[in-house]
Image 1 (cartoon, rainbow, N blue to C red):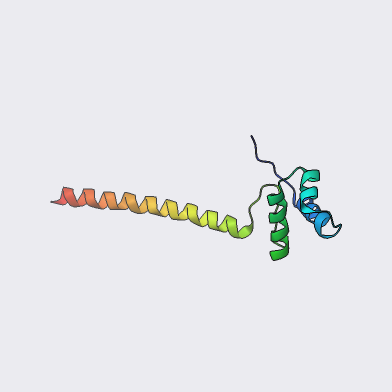
Image 2 (cartoon, rainbow, N blue to C red):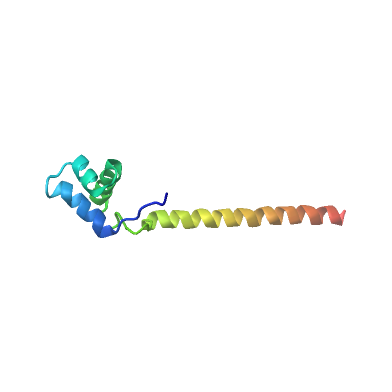
Length: 96
């Protein structure tokens, strides 16, 4: 099963159904064929940070993308460190 991706516009309109038009979260979720928890999360994100919320099309928020990039770099640096440790140990044994 593939994960569905929604555009930013779709998410904003879904939240507006609830906030502006007075449709219940449960009804809006049923009408749009999304989980209530997903719709509630979109509402929370739009309330907390309207400009950065719900990027859409499966894109990560900027802060989450930066965290992912930093985690990837940390993993690479750890691998390099481990290789250098092994090389240092090898050459130390060869020298004696």
